[in-house]
Amino acid sequence: MAELARITGISRQSLSLYANDENIPSYENVKKIARCLEFPEEYFFTEDKCTTITTNTYFRSQAAAKRKDQNSSKKKLEYTAKMYEVLLNYVNFPAINLSLPIGIYSDIDDIMRAKPEEALEKIEKLTASLRNAWGIGNGPIDDMQFLLESNGIVVVGLKNIDNSIDAFSQKVHVKNGESVYIVALAIGEKPRERLRFDMAHELGHIMLHDWDDSNEDLSKDEFNAVERQANMFASAFLLPRETFGKMVRPYATNIEFYRTLKRKWGVSIQAMMYRARQLNIITANQFQYMMRQISQRGWRTCEPGDVPGTINSTIFQGAIDMLINGGYLTAKEIVDDFYDAGICLQSKDMEDLMGLKSGTLNIGPKILTLKPRIEGK
Image 1 (cartoon, rainbow, N blue to C red):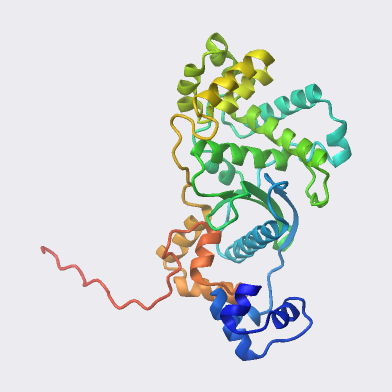
Image 2 (cartoon, rainbow, N blue to C red):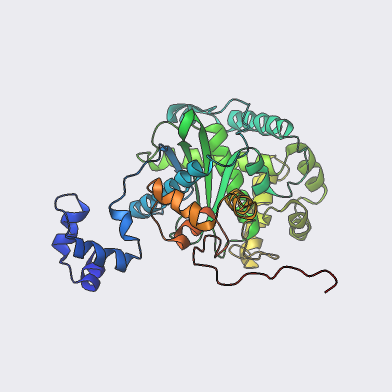
């Protein structure tokens, strides 16, 4: 607020009144604010015509992230959902394919009462059933993002979010009573194995937990219990008990062996060690000793084979490429449609929120065209 006041020349008191709907800024001040924040002026005047309703949001690092950063990230994902709703007018996105029971633990009391051994057994059965329903067998998952997207779960990667936010997910009701789950990943220096685990973790929230009640007021113990269950789900889903257990058992205490397994399963060494302990393949003492070795080797924060991960082209990129390359709509017409729905953002911000390649929504005029091909030349 102080920085905005300094740059725009508008008093901090006036900005506070504007932000709290206690005063209306002059048009000149709106232009100053829009220019400083790099928002189109229309953003401050346009009515939101989308019907999206956002329910609960699950943050992986709720304890560390500040409330304002959480609110900022939630707002970004709401705009992603609004653009999804607009594109539904033109594109058949994959239908949600979650035929198994969702929300096994319907409220926080259920979560807090669940005994770890019983919860793990229930989660093991759920992940096995989900793998079977999705027809992916019991081996490594080559492309977690594609798996989620092909079963109706939207995945986006956000670059400009606070470092304390790992990943988060929202359930959004769009038009005609349809619902969509959106998983947002923080893209940066995080290894690809971590991104894969983040996606599986958010899938765990989708399958295990309630989405209609807010979890913002959970105590630290309640939040940790929710996160533990999602982690248990991610481990069981990515590393099936039968196949992973059989493979790791002969050399379960050999840390070097986990480097080989990491390449095969696409899961971090530490997560696989945790899974081996979870399955009682190694003892608590063995696990603690192995973790001390991990620390001594400096692998806690950077394991062998770690490279910064990213995500593939999103379903938004595929949808917009189909519309533009197929001659249905131009980039300008797509942006105009977003504006008509009340989504008044810079094209670069729209691209970021949908995980698009830079320039996808470039609406500048084309001054070059191709000459007709002449036969024989």
